[in-house]
Image 1: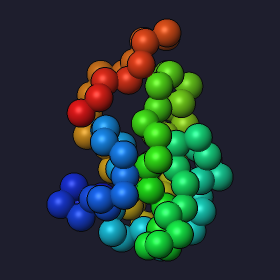
Image 2 (image 1 turned 60 degrees about the vertical axis):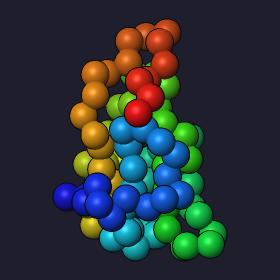
Image 3 (image 1 turned 90 degrees about the vertical axis):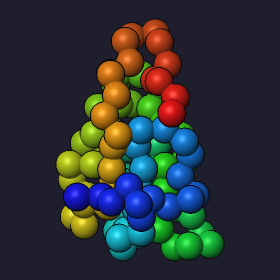
Image 4 (image 1 turned 180 degrees about the vertical axis):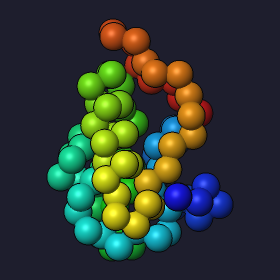
Length: 89
């Protein structure tokens, strides 16, 4: 389970994040490339954009569930409704 205290500073603000246990396996970037990207300076994946639609939210959740090191976290918030952006933290 991702640790919010180890949340990488390179993540954009919002409910999804990657913590310092990331091993840069590329799974999240393959699953949800609009949400995750590699930060070249730290050599890990980070959230570069929060999901803005239910479909993107589902892909981010899929990446979270499939992360082999459980490095992706999510601060639970209501799902965005179609046509509405996700809540910002």
